[in-house]
Amino acid sequence: MGSIKENLERVRERIARAAARAGRGPEEVLLVAVSKTVPPERIREAIAAGARTLGENRVQEAKEKIQALGRSGVSWHLVGHLQSNKVKDAIALFDLIHSLDRLSLAEELDRRGRASGKRVEVLVQVNAADEPSKGGFRADELRQALEALAGRAGLWVRGLMAIPPEPKTPEDSRPCFKAMRTLLEQARGWGITGLDLDALSMGMSGDFEVAIEEGATIVRVGTAIFGPRPA
Ligand SMILES: *Cc1c(COP(=O)(O)O)cnc(C)c1O
Image (cartoon, rainbow, N blue to C red; front, side, top):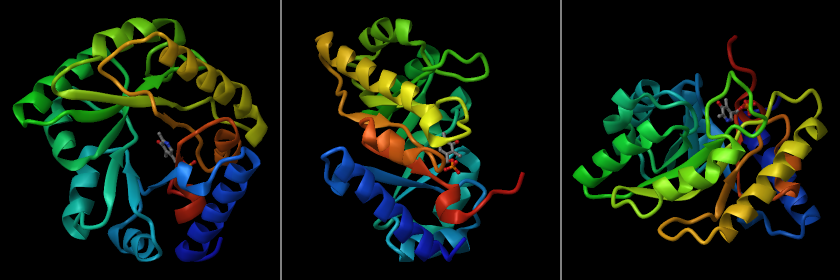
């Protein structure tokens, strides 16, 4: 792998080419540089090279990094599972929570959001391949879930998120990404008010180009930027 700067440039080029293949502009895809396990010095390199959105999967780890790096000019997203007892910190730290995966968490986010006078921005996680090991709403539960989540004073649904089964080749993820795009379009047709369904967060280092071809508006890329993580 090259330097973080070179890796980031390469990822950006790949995003632009994938977007072009889908008839979209590169600015239509937000790159979240997933910096979990990466120490602050290396995250600083990514920021210096132009990374503007960072993704973390643990609240405590993110808190320490945000203290070290500050938040000027960068936005932090939570991409991992959120425990209800970490909601208060998460709301203060993150601009978008990708992993709203259960109604009890929504209740807590809404309650804390109202208490701090803001609508907490979230994506609703869909367990697209219905894997027991993964969180999220099943596709057949989504309509009811969105109806329950819409129009809350402390919560703002911005779209959907999915993590497909780990692909062996990028193409393995295409059916799942396609299904997510279809589901998003169906959900828009349900006419539920009080939420937005603009964002579709899908695609990681192994499959982000396919995700973009299938309509991702946010990709979450770690390894291709920062190199392999410790096992
Ligand atoms: C770790 C992680 C990523 C990034 O994975 P890479 O394969 O390193 O790009 C993306 N999304 C989520 C939810 C993650 O936990």
